[in-house]
Amino acid sequence: MGRIIGGIFGGIFHMIGMVLGSIFGGIFGGIARILFPVLLVIGVLWAVTNPSFIQGMLRMLSGGPFQITTAPAVINQIRNMNTLVTKAYESEVISDAQNSSFFGRSEHIEVRVEGTILAGIDLSRIREQDVTINGGTVTVRVPPAYIVSKDLQAFTKVKDQGWMPGVDASLAPDAEQRGRDELLATACNYGILADAEREAQLALADLLSKLAGVQTLNLIQDTPRPGESTGCP
Image (cartoon, rainbow, N blue to C red; front, top):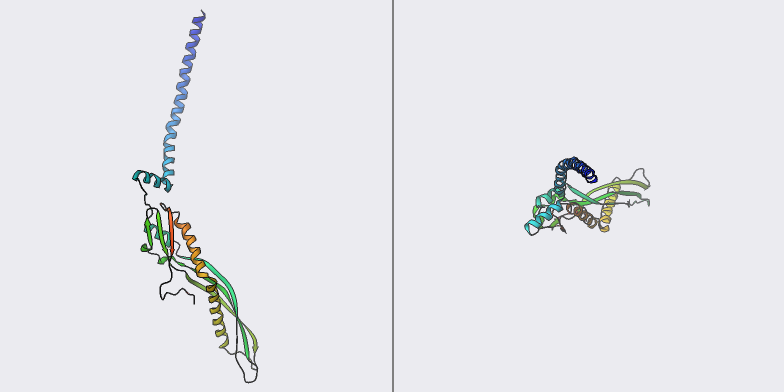
């Protein structure tokens, strides 16, 4: 009798187990059928947006380095920056001017010149022949820096106008020009061009290192050609 009852309950539990397995199996199977395409799409999108993954796969399949970056791609990235102003020099100088007089009292003025001198790189000068690509190594020749602009202002102060009212009109322009020349020479002696080239290379390195396929970046700084003016005396 016990064996009969045990057999009945065993059969019931077996049937319940089969039903529950069928239900949960169907649920998880449905979830799997929904999630699989979603996960597949996410995986493809991740691979496409990760150049290093693509480069590694291509290198593995080809058995060697795979070049993705091209010279036109490098040129386009550089020219998007146009003129790269990387260094500013701010200062002021004071220039005196006076003339002589038969009566022992001369006209005397003081001209203060102040403002900002900017230096940078003309990136539009970089051509495809300035870009060399060898596998993952990119070499770019960078043009020399030059004085981009001089935003200077002059303020004149009369120290002594002599015996007669007014001041010789030729005194102020001459003193102002000397002040402008001195301010520019000071900026150049300070090393504004060398600093501009150094800062430009850092900016270019940050930009180009993000291009797909770039493993090593070499920036070669060009010097001015004979007769080429950089704006410095």
